[in-house]
Image (cartoon, rainbow, N blue to C red):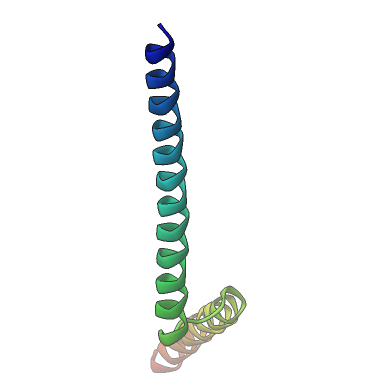
Amino acid sequence: MQKDSKLFEDFAKMASGAAGAAMDMRREFEAMVTDKIERLMSRGHFVTRDEFEVVKAMAEKARAENEALRAELEALKQ
C-alpha cells in the first residue's frame, strides 16, 4: 500500500511539473508573438487614428467644395 501511495505522489509531481512547464511555454510563446507583432507594426507605415480622422475630414470638405463648384459651373453654363 505504501508503494502505491509513493507511485501516486510521483505521478502527481510529474503532472504538476508538466503543467508548470506548459504554462511557461505558453507565456514564452505569447511574449514571442507580441514582440513579433510590435516589430511588424513599427516597421509599417501606419497612421494614428487622429491622423486618419483629420485626413478624412479634409477629404469630406474637399468633396463638398467640389460639388459646390460643380453646381456653380453648371449654373454659369446655362
